[in-house]
Length: 390
Image (tube, rainbow, N blue to C red; front, side, top):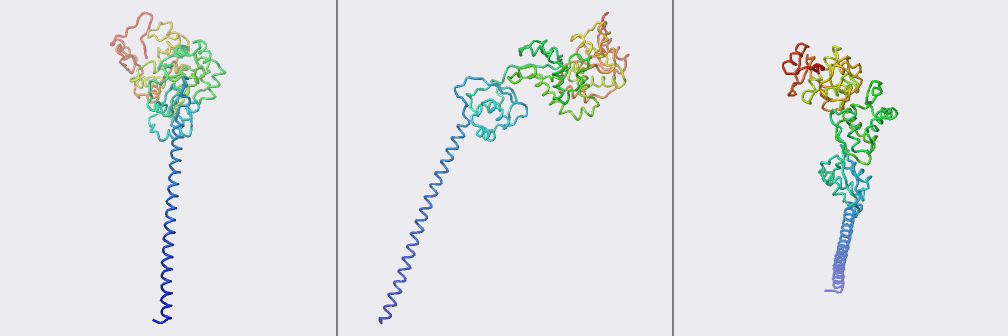
C-alpha cells in the first residue's frame, strides 16, 4: 500500500470515529433531556397533588360548623319553591354558613333533590352538610312546632283568637289592626287582589276571607300582627295568581269570588261544593236571593244551624234571605279547592238544596220539590225557625 493510500485510510477511519463519537454524544444529550423531563413531570405531579389536597382541605373546612360550641337556636324559614342556591343565601343570612363558596359547591353536588319547605330550628354548631340533609328530608325533629292554624271556614274573629294564643297580642288588638284604614291602604297598594271593595262601610271585617286557610309557622320575622298578616296574604297571592286567568274569565272580581266561595265553604263539604255553587249561580242569574242561612249566622257571629225568625228578618246587608245578590263581603276563610269548585261550578237547573241528617245534599228545581225534600228527610221546622233553603 502506498503512502497516499495509507493516509486516505487513516483519514477515513478518523471520520468514522468522529461520526461514532457524535452519535454517542447525541445519545447522552437525549438521555439527559429525558431524565430532566421526567423530573419536571414529577415536580408538576407533586404540585397538582398539593393543590388538590389543599383545595380538599379548604372545601372540608368551609363546610364545618360556624361555631362548634354554640348553643344558640336559629329559626330559619325555607319558603315553597326554594332551590339549593336560594337556601344557601337564606342559611348564610342566618349566620349558619362558614364559607358561602364551599356551601354553594356542596349544594350543587350534594344530591339534595327533595328539599322540603318548612320552618326549621338549627344551630351554628351544625355543619352545612348536616343542615342540608335535614332540609332535604324534612326531618320533623328540627321543624318549628310553634304554629298558627287558620282553619278552613273560620271567621276572622276566630282567626284573631287563634293568633292571640301564639303572639303577644289580644284578640281586640289584632282585630283593631285588621280594621285600621291606614294599614289596609298599605296592603291595598302591595297586593293586586286587595281593592277598595274591602273598605265598604257595610263590611264587618275588611280582611275577612283574605287570610288563606293554612298552617303558618311563627318565626322571628313574622311574630308581629303585620308579619303574620302578610304571611297569610302572600299565601293567598300565590293561590289567586295561579288562577288569575280563570278569575278574570269568570266575570267576578276577586272580592266577589271570595265572597261566594266563603258561602259555599260554609254550606257544603268539599265533595258537594261544586253542586251547591251551581245552585247559587242559578239564583244569581235569575236575580233571586241566595237564601243562605250561613250569611245570617255571620251577622251574629254564630255557627249555629237553627235561626230565630227575628234573626232571619234582620235588615243587615249580609242577610241573603232578605236581599238578593251577594252580601258585602266574604264570611270566612277559604282554601284553593273551594275556589276551584266555585269557579268550576256544576251546571244544572237546581234552585234549592238541603243536607239531610247524614250530610247528603238533596237538590230540587222548585220550591215544591224543596218542601218535599224537607218533609221526606225529616228536617222539621220549629215555631221560631225556618227550614234552610241553603
